Length: 123
Image 1: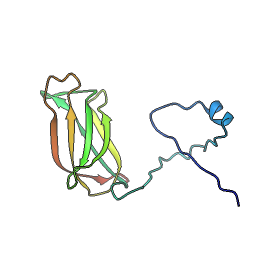
Image 2: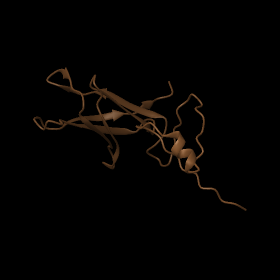
Image 3: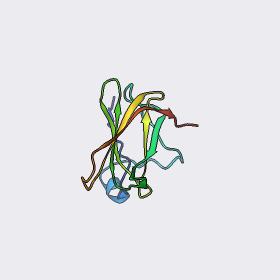
Image 4: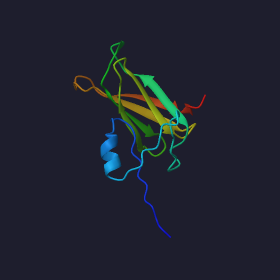
């Protein structure tokens, strides 16, 4: 019996497929759908999204963190896009969270949005 070890890499970079093949990696062809992995009770098909604003105007490049409310555990981190929007996915549906956004220029205190309920991202 032969045991094979599989490694999966995704997100945020463009792979060099030739180098991956040289190193013995199998590149799975695109199936046209994003894959969601559920490794623990915090993960699932839920999403949380919003927009970061400073003095009523959109605010890009802010660090945004999502915490589980009952345990205060950090679940995900991201950076707001050029339109100020952010989106967290692969979160359990119905999880109550809070979001903290930080000013990268450090001119303003962090802002918190409390009682954020994750929604079903498959809809």
